Length: 419
Ligand code: HAM
Image (cartoon, rainbow, N blue to C red; front, side, top):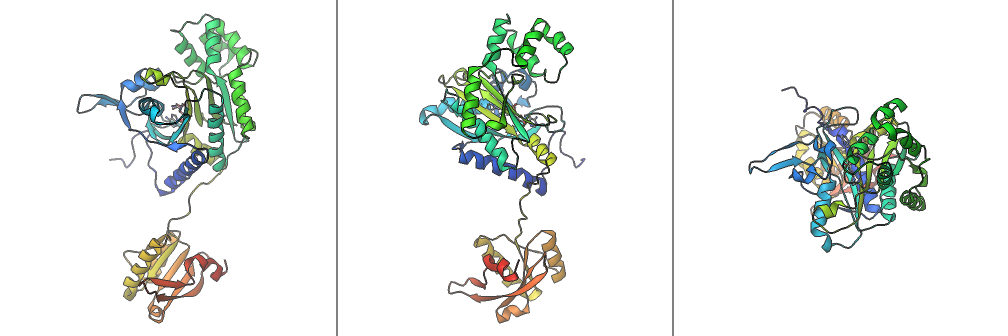
């Protein structure tokens, strides 16, 4: 036993978990404000679901095995196939466009490195049943809202928008057949930052025209321009750039694709997505247009650290009840009642000396210590604000329902101690 998780897997101790929850909160809030409904699917799927749909890269990274019923199964490496399977089977029961989101934990056997692990959480938003660029505009503005709720803006990140169908026509025009296309797209996907010599070596005669396309000399994509107009109308124009270098590694994309990168270009993509109009049909469903994106927690957390954005939730223990040996029952009654009343209340179950209880209160980051001592028999508790050490008296009495009434009540304590 090493005390360490498996390579590429992460332990989330409470502080790290609190940072993770802040990310989840921003994702859920942005989804909610933009009219997406949350769904969830199984962590384990049939291996076949990924074999043809996701493309070679992801299939090579699958955690797969035979279950006890001799089925070939895989831990989900991405959510899109599950989402498409679910929508294909039930779409008749839902009004279009379907706008759903999810925050699954995903598993890919990748080489662990900065921002890349063998598991990660990924915010997925997808729109089904909308052919127009309004769907992409909706998605891009939602992801920008999510990032802005975390304190990031267009100076920190850029949404690079491209068009896979533009590349399809480009490759057809240059004589690349359907069979070779996935390989060429995969090479293009990895060409970012390459030298002209490397491009010549990998792409041969295509190197020159590819370079022209990258520099914007290869002609426009009307679909991409429509998306940019839509995003602009929703107020996120300055977050976006056209960049045909983006082709996306996954096999199922058919139209406009996009990626979110940090402006400094130091990190890998924070998010990626695009249109996948054929996937639902391939899964035996109806021919429904679809588009979506995935944003991972790991690169995002790296970026927030780089930008010095602390997103840790406040300590859980708001009020710490400190009781003298003879007042334990009163202390527990208070803890229970405060919790039922909506406050975060904690106490020392070992209930040692008062000093020790106060030390624990401070270590837990509590704001208030409610001191239950001998004066409680006279209807009084002490109230201490731990950071300022200011102390005042709180009166208590038993209400007609048997509850303990505090005067002033906790909502007014800050005013009473003058902070
Ligand atoms: P993806 O580009 O493979 O797309 O992943 C999206 C994001 O998930 C990446 O930009 C990255 O932030 C994060 N991510 C991916 N792999 C890892 C990893 N090993 N460790 C940490 N973070 C990672 C998809 O998965 C598509 N299914 C997204 C989508 C949804 N397209 C349409 N709808």
